[in-house]
Image (cartoon, helix red, strand yellow):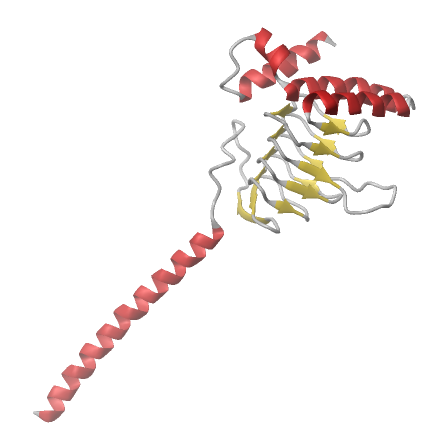
Length: 223
């Protein structure tokens, strides 16, 4: 139990440069409080104390602004930065060393009592405001950009942006160190526009060359 608490506190120091002291982390980090409350709620839920589990998670939501269903499964090293507005559904599964920013939703798209929430692999980073909707897997070592809406499977080691979310970068090599720079995302629209400009410039160059050749030919014919 105490080893898990120490691991949770270490996760905060590893991923938040604003953390200054253990005392500050213990008393002033709602994401950490939400995780600890969830541990209690999940323990009650697994033992079929459903009402007490929901009551505990509801109390945690009141205190932290973070709603985690007691049925959700969460691995070690889970970190919610800031946290306000985070919602994690009942059948969500979260791997080890996952990071969520504020406003993230791990939601479902079905009323059936089946697996309807996403599974996040190890070392996944979800940017602020992103929505992951459905019973699919976001592969390990992947990043989802802020305000993206992801509705289908994400391969491991991928970067996803947009509405709906699209994989804009994928690598076969797993990252050696957790990358939290969720603000530095590729911009596929800007890249496409840049490619169009390159093609236009190339067409202009060819047109100018043909025009010059045409003028030269006209002069030769007149002579």
